[in-house]
Image 1 (tube, rainbow, N blue to C red):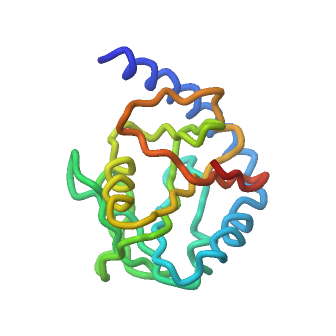
Image 2: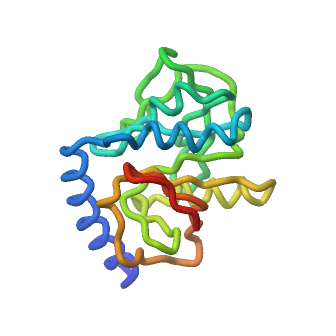
Image 3: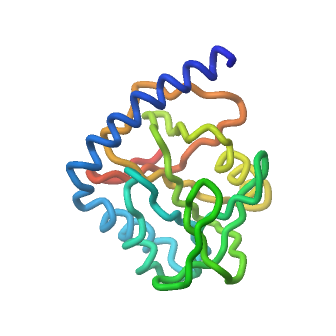
Length: 183
């Protein structure tokens, strides 16, 4: 493991503990804040995610979004994500890493992406799970057209500084239970 790999692994351990404690306290008004923020992007294709374990839950905001909504589908290691159309109540199946994905539906190319994360910092960088899926996806989407990356997390997931590499994509905004910050 490279030095940056070890540094990121340690940062993940710290952030997972903070996220678990925050999850136990509840997410407060986070989904409502996210829905209000997303309303200004109405009609643009949106990518959300299906929350796993102690991730903050974007589903209420996704369910009320006025436009097409997709969720990530992992095609394989080292590949960018694709996003399959999701609606509340659609048939779902377990995909890679036990994340649920729609059984069928159109592919959505998002212009707005709600990004799950393990940690974030005041510069707008995020720490993910280590697979690079969102970084590759955002890089590809942003090469085609402007694409907003909105981190969604608990305040407790903020670190003083997230360790970064040149492949890490920056967030445009972070939404937490206390509000929205732009970067």
